[in-house]
Image (cartoon, rainbow, N blue to C red; front, side, top):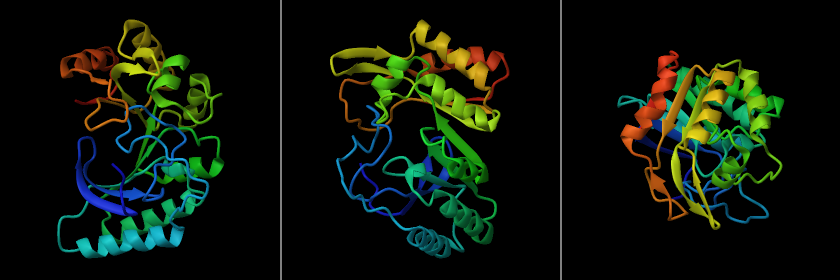
Length: 254
């Protein structure tokens, strides 16, 4: 499923409420620094010259949508997501600045959220942009390198969990850590990030990063890999329990 416009929705998000989406990637291909086995947009599409919207186009599309919604139900949140990793856009900082200004003008009660896979946090402009967001929702699907690489399939083959954690520490815990729990098989290798070994490593990472919120969720739509299994609600609550016992704010979407 690809989003065919820069601004889409609003849609009812399981986790965020009435969400107006912003897609900074091409409308005809998936473009991401991960190639997750569970992504509803499918796998990345080889593309030599992807057509990204300009910062002017992104700003105009959002303003036109917000103008059209005046007098009706306004969004609870403006969410950067779409057909790939939003922070890959070279003008992400400028777009975030414009988005916050438009939010303040048209729907000041709405939050600005960014769903990110954390891979671009080495860029100072991306970190600065994310600090403008009300909700920085940053991914860590496994605290074990081999599992992370199998589930998320990073384009950068040298990416490690240690590097991701190092980058996440820049926010001093002021972010939401997001993890998808699932099991399945891909490329002849089985995986399950709900095993005791996986959870022990993941709990340790959560303790180390100490995010203000932990968001755990399950697959909910069609996925490019067909062998994936959805984690049961009861198991998700079991996973959340040890963190809640330590007073972490844990949101379960199952």
